[in-house]
Length: 190
Image 1 (cartoon, rainbow, N blue to C red):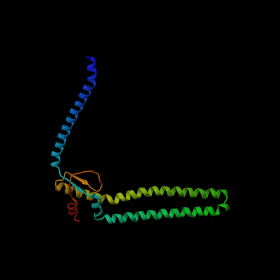
Image 2 (cartoon, one colour):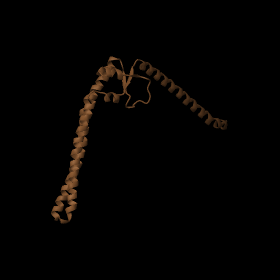
Image 3 (cartoon, rainbow, N blue to C red):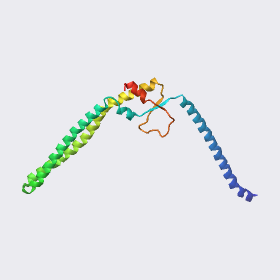
Image 4 (cartoon, rainbow, N blue to C red):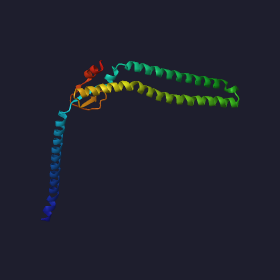
């Protein structure tokens, strides 16, 4: 009898495990189904929309002016950088040309001047990069805030619960939603 039990016990245990797992899967499916139904009920009460914020920003009044001011500022920094590079080249060429006739103290002085100028150029480059970023933020922030406010006003006025930025590609899938670009353009008088 023990032999028969040992023969069927592993199969019985395996069958009980399979039944338990099947029951757990069915319970999980039921919970998931109830959760989806609950979410679907809530989603029906919400209104979703989308807008291509990059497109909106590109047509904002003042955007062209901000871009022109940014480019002018960048050109000024670039001109300064080019002047510093020319100065470095001139000093280096002078050093190489006259190195054979220079005394040791003058060589050391010229080498120090070249090294100091290289360090100034590197520091200027880092500072210019930060300045350009700050200038861009200064010029674009008012436009971005104005566009955001228009989107918020349109969303509130038209009962939207969520507005998604379709230019960022943050959603992998969504049900079709209303594009509010025409409403925001109207709000901005575009």
